Structure formats: C-alpha cells, structure tokens
Amino acid sequence: MTASSLYALSIDAPVCRYVDLDSFTDLPSEDLLSEEERARADGFRFELDRQRYVASHVALRQALSEYTGLHHAELHLSKGSFGKPSLTGHARTQFSLSHSQGLALIAIGGRGPLGADIELLRPVPDAAILAAEHFTRREQEALAALPAQERDRAFLTCWTRKEACLKAIGVGLLVSSQSFEVGLEADCRSVELSVAGRILWLVLGPAPARLDCVGAIAEWRQTEARANRLGAAGSGDAGDTGGYANGPSLPPKAGAPARSMEIAP
Image 1 (cartoon, rainbow, N blue to C red):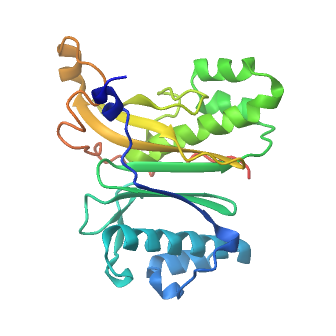
Image 2 (image 1 turned 30 degrees about the horizontal axis):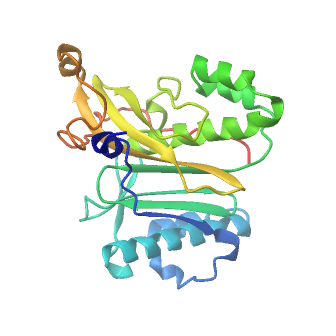
C-alpha cells in the first residue's frame, strides 16, 4: 500500500479512549456541565442512567480540556441544526461521544468531522428484522449467511459503522442507513454518501479492540458536487486531493428533525 493510500484511509483521532462509566471516580463538580446538560441529567428516571450520563459528559469535557489546553470554564459546547455538538470558537477541534450502558467511547481530532459509536456485545434476537430495516441488501444477505453464533457480533459491528458515519455528517437518519454500504467486518475503508446532490466521502475504521464491545470511528474527509464527479474522468477515491477539497459542508437544512437508530440494550 502506498503512502498516499495510507493517508487516504487514515482517521485523525489522536484521542480515542474508552471510559468505564460505572467506575469513573474522577468526577469533579457537575458544575462543569452546561445548564442544558444538567437539566437533561435531572430528567433521567433512573439514578444509574443519570450517573452514566454525567460521567460520560464530564469525561468528554476533561478530554477536550486536555486536547485543547483550555480550562474547563472555557469549554462552551453548542449544537448544529441537527444536534451535532461542536466546541464554540474552535472549529478545527472535532469530537464525538458514544456510550453503551456503562461504557463510553470518546474520539477527538483536528481535521474532519468525527463520528464514534460503540455497542456492548450481547444477544440481538431481532437482528434480522433490524437489518431488513437499516442494512443494504448485500449486508442483509451477508449477515444471513453467517453461522448463528457469529451473527450478533457481525450485526453490532455493521450497526456501529452505520451510526459512526451518520454521526460524522451530523444529520441522523435524514440520510437512510440503507443508502450506503459499510460491511460487517471491522475493516478500514472509504464510504460514499449521497446527500442533497453532493457526494460525501468518509473514512471508516474500527475503534480500538476490546473483548466486550465493538466500536467504529468515521471521519468526513471530502465533499464533491455530483455534477463535477460525474463529469470528471477517473475521479479516484477519497483522499486523492489530500483531505477535503473545499472543506466539509453540511447539506441544506431540512424541515424534519434528525432521528437516531435504536436497538434494545
């Protein structure tokens, strides 16, 4: 593999860490959280869910403080039109947070928008039904062809890869998860999404390996106008121009709110 192809399939996430939320004892005051975060924490019905939410968001703020060198009080998070958070005044700092029950995954980088997703390994009895609703035909067929004992892991792997891509572009299911292919293997690849007449190129790869979960990290690297892509001969794959040519740009606002895929814990 050449140096250029290695760069094309690289993901800029120098901070990529897991946090055990149920044993996270490095908890400074909840005053670190924003008013919105504290209000959401207080809205949880069960105390365990509240504790995990607080722990994950405090851990994110600590990681952002370490990465940027900013004091906690200087970290101001805002949300885009579809709810994707960003660090106000630091557009080049990209991050994503995901959690599954008592385990969180944090990714932070300084290039393209990031999406992270994690799922604890567990039985998924309705995997075939969910795959029919969210996976491509080829992904569904690949899942059905696996031995029964391998299907839960493969399903959750594909699921986290879909979610990571959708989180990176920040529009939820305004883009159908059946409109792009990520596969059932935890490999590194370029992914193409068609959004509002443009082609979005992402690089997708696995999160650091653990025995108890599967996870994925995606980085939005490049945006092309569809007309330019169709009109250019031999346009190549993501990364040919080194990063994203004109910078990632979100698609036009849509009237419907973004949704998230959900599976039972």
